Every structure is written in structure tokens, then in C-alpha cells.
Image (tube, rainbow, N blue to C red; front, side, top):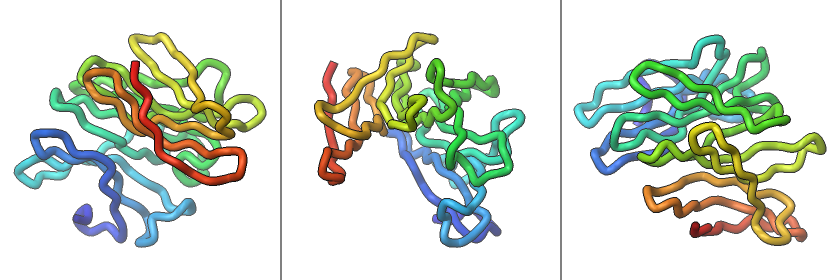
Length: 178
């Protein structure tokens, strides 16, 4: 499924109503040199594209059953979310920016109907950690003994799925229960 008249697209989420989130890309490879722009695809096949105010590019990570979109954006001239990134929540046309305190890179990977968001942020040393954000309160988490942790999705019960990298450099999936 490609965004109309664009060289590349990626789908990042689907809700139980069949609405999909994603981004279209400035090149067909959709690689790290591409610029991305968020979209939501309705059940009836209508694309709605958007970027948060001031964004040079963005990626919609998920759309909830209530139509809340969670994603990330960049405000620099570099490709979307390479080294500088902010998360966003879009609720009925109103954007809220997510920035893990003290971090220049916050990527919002998933959200649920309770307005809880999970994702990844980098610390001052460039290490990636998972986070949970709920109503302005941030909580950091790491998979035990991991060198990198990222929350990629969260359901209504607060169960988080994601990826982590172990000390040998191998990537694995995880499930984190509240």
C-alpha cells in the first residue's frame, strides 16, 4: 500500500477498526537518507497526511481506536529522526510534543487508549533506553543487561512490546508487563 504519487511508503500500525498509520518517503528505499511525512489511512481508503508544526519530517507510529496518533518528528534539515527527534501525540487536531527530560532524541513508538506512550530516548552518552510517558510523567526502563532498549507498542492493559540489544550485539524482542 503506497501513499498516492510518492516514491515510497511504510505502514507502522493498524487498529481494530482497520485504520492504519505510517509515513510516505522522499525516495523509494525509505532509508535513513529519506525525508518522511506522517499519514493515517481510513477504513474507506482515504489518506490524511500531516506533520507537527515546525517539523521538517515525521513518522506516525500508531493510531488508536479513538483516532489518537502517536509518532515522532524532526525539526532539523537532516533526514527524519536520525540524531534529533521529538515524539508527538495528535488528538483531534491538537499536537503535544514528547521529549524525555534531558534527551535530544525521543522516538514515540506506540500509544494506547489511556494516553500512555512508549518509545526510546537517548541519554547524554548516546545510549538508548525505553520509556513510558503518561500525562506528562516519564519513566525510563531497560531490559536487564541490555545495551539498548526500545518500547515499540503498548496495549490498553499497559503491556509493552519492544526490542533490545544484548551485550553480544544480538537483537531480541521482549514483553514487559506492568
